[in-house]
Length: 279
Image 1 (cartoon, rainbow, N blue to C red):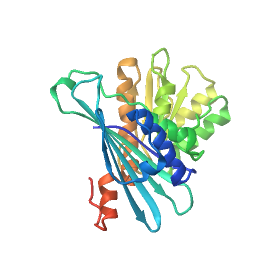
Image 2 (cartoon, rainbow, N blue to C red):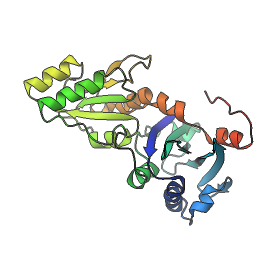
Image 3 (cartoon, rainbow, N blue to C red):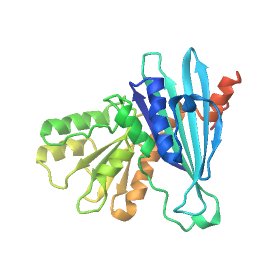
């Protein structure tokens, strides 16, 4: 199952981003890595994980892919696959897509905890040092401190050109960690937190945009024109927090999947073969 997805536009160049990945791999594998080693297209096997990379040139610009396959020492029987693809853009900078898949195919994992929806350490490193575009969904919280903020929020939610998911959460007295949800959704969705009691003007503006959930609930808006239901209501009590994260991922991931190129596709491009359709 897909456990995480994000698409980031980064100002850092290919070499600088490979250095960031090398630092992350050094911590992940407990072995020293350099940017040159990361650049190489090969396979490394470690006791707890397998690291695979691929490199291809597309219209004179590099496209590089990383795949890390590992088990979960905390949940016997659960396997993880992390995919990162970096594609240099003609306009400058780099587009990064990150996917995380979890597989519970072996019996011991079936009674384990649910697959978490959290931001991987690699994504945190890319956001910290890769120079993300300020317009990245979820990177900056939407303020709701005055009537003008509510007007802006409503306009962004109802914008027919909106390409990302928006989740409006009214936590109330629940235990949902909104900041953690917002961090996990960076690059995929904006998470907007409202308070149960706000000014009449703010409430009226958000209600008109169908974005005023009851306390303990959230409204999740899919990208406009996505073809799915435009909005859905979710409980946000602690027991339902995982379902809320799953809704954000389900509605926002198709755009990331459409932009993503897998390691196998990059290998096919490098070999001069037509890429296969992963769908």
